[in-house]
Amino acid sequence: LLWVLLALFIARHTETPRIVLSDPNPIRPLLHTAIAQLTINFILMIYLGLYLPKVKGIHDSKAWQVYCPRVIPIMTANGIICAFALMRSLWPVWGFCTPFVLGIEFMGLLFSMHFIPWC
Image 1 (cartoon, one colour):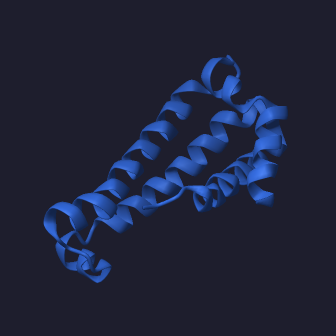
Image 2 (image 1 turned 135 degrees about the vertical axis):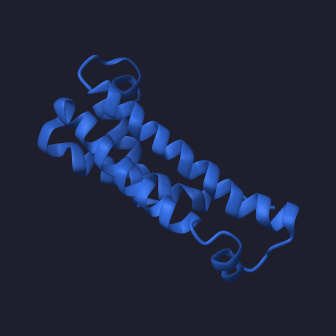
């Protein structure tokens, strides 16, 4: 709960959504690269978490190494590229505080998943 509240506080006081969507200071090509990498990771996560278990009937994550062995390394590389591109694209806005702002936002997003009721 602390990470979520801290992320909300930081997002409110740094105006993160406004800066990402409409501020001219971020480096837009790098920001678009980060968003594209994040989109690819979400699509691969949906593939592993929903498509394989529900459509193909593969419920064991150990089968991923046989059925689709390159997905996890691709997601890892995408995550690293996304983190660096996002940090570099927002560096002109927050400077040295950029890794801290993004780290807190990431942890808040990660821990907010605990509050989603799964049926």
